[in-house]
Length: 560
Image (tube, rainbow, N blue to C red; front, side):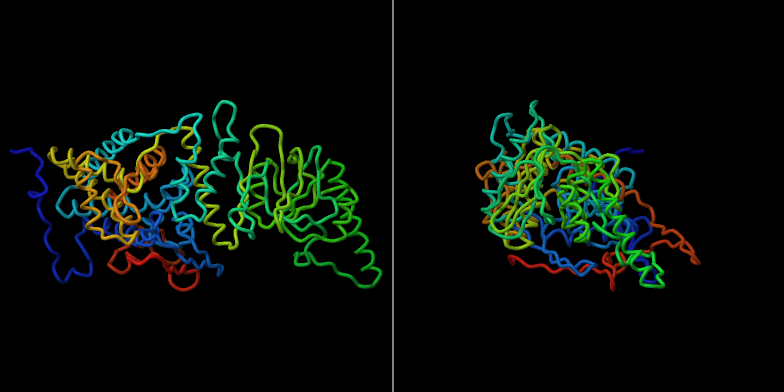
């Protein structure tokens, strides 16, 4: 008996389903995989137009009615309301990639979709799921082992990081990219520890609407947008900070408690008691040494007068997110009442820094392990500030990765094409499932530079033919640019090896899990039976729920 594993041409082809079984869609063995594939394809179709520096934007209308214009995959994925478990699974992997490296979210989604599509073709040809999983794992290991060989540049320990950060920050045609890149590079360089290490939390980001991007600057310590409410505006020799997620004054009139008053005397007594309580609470704060109060809520004028009496700075935060970030930085809890914290936050000084017609509240420290510098961004529109803020975070995360692993690999799709060539060359020499998987993996990788060419409005067939021809000669520095193929070494388009490797692992782990899914069973609800999803072409592709809470997506940008 011949134990040789059949090639792709020899693999048995599945029979076509009988017409009476057409409601079932496809065969039993592959219908559940195709269910995952359809959901992942729908999610990828949302993200694909945003991939690369020439990608389009999305207008997201959230459930709260807010409109957000963004091209960043992480923000789009957060806004989507997904129903299919496979789409949830992929989003979790992509968001983990964004949180850990700050980059590669679109890469994870698009590579997962391409690999699942190739896996589907192999399953249709008759390759068993177990062999497919093992073969894909072998192809992943081969790609990861070959990836470091493409790292031909690295950031030196005393080298200006601007050239390495530029392409990572300019992922969506950033305005004034050169200036912002140098600003981030200077902030990261100045915030390094004495041993050369770097922590991303040492650099803060503050967006102030107004002015122009050229007015963006660096401020010492941690700067935030806020409002100084009292007469005391500065603490210079030791600040003790408390954070209040409540009104700074009497309880809100919307509180559930109700005072029952039967006479004017009761009303006067109630008011006097309330004022005495507030005065007692403010005096307790002052007795604990609290001289800076950051509040997210309404500020009562009489309570503010008491704070001025005790020489206390009162700052009104613009959002709860600001307060949460300060809580993490200071290591002090958010308080829901005017009570002294057990562990207040401490810094050297608090003051207001004027920036044109606006200003920022600055917290400064003299010890290590605290924010050293803040990148203050200026811009005329909120949408422009959001894009610049996201780019700055990308730059900070990229510098953190380069401090851990300084190696850089070609960007603009050059690395994907180079790996595709390596896997194709090796796959053509292998027999059995491994050879098929290597070739399928190579086809999936080629879909990424193809998407870059599509989003740039280029003739995809011409670009891919030219790239393939040059890569066949051994030049793996050729990628996709705005007008055709480019030499990424000359153009300075780089990716960090660390982020790319982690994105490969995230995408392939999702694929290896989904190819083994047998069926999707939904938990039983009250009064109903457990339900198994029998996918069809319409239901499997339905990711966005209709009606209330739906996220509507519109695209605009350069036409192909």
